[in-house]
Image (cartoon, rainbow, N blue to C red; front, side, top):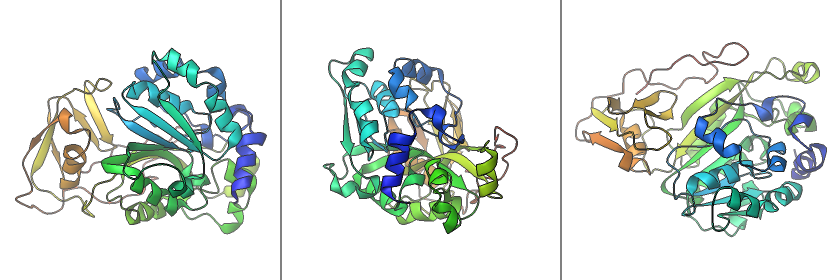
Length: 352
């Protein structure tokens, strides 16, 4: 699928989320109260042009410098700008001029809405597959986010490589996207409606994990997932029997993460000091760490907390001096396992 087809779909065909023909690009997640309050201050025109598939608001954002890949009309850019505060900054990149026009004309509105002396956001027109062409310094971002955009990219490995290059050591890519339970046939990938609706460009979940590791992101972590229902009989028939889900992953830019969860007898204690997560902090779908409780972790998880912005929020027990083998219960499993019903509720997992 060519860039101009996607630009046309999101810049001209779609005038708002109501124009979408499936629910793949606009699947709501359970929204925390602090995020609801932030979104209530965003301009209505920006909200109307939102086409995301998940929540991309990781924890501990104060003062962070964030890049949003495929920012569209800027809903997530502006939400994140409130959370990073005046000491932080958010940069949006998108290839669709019509979307960026909407985003740019509301910069002053949002600075005032969030009590900032001046806007802490900026927008760049460009392709997320060609981040090297933009005036963005390598290693200059703490966090890179993306919301239902990787599936639209024509060169997905290039997006991940570019993101890894722009992240600081210990930074992370935190993003939501659509995934398939098998590889999409080439004929479906040429269908402009299915592609624009975030379905026929979706990666097979296991191919994504391979791509992420090849780009330098060892041990990808899945935060949440939900089964998608197409809810359009004609399009549903076209893609059957392929199943789709929206999932949020976090990829840490840490050299030397091990390919498996190795046990060194380590543990962490969450201090409860992240403002929006006083009682527990969720790292991924099998690491929900309650405040004050000793939580055993594998070596990779230890590093994801000790060598990133999360370090001040934890106490660390143990070191890497003794190895006990694989962390019991760990293994790579399909995100489709345990998903049932319309909401795609996931069964609890158990791993490191």
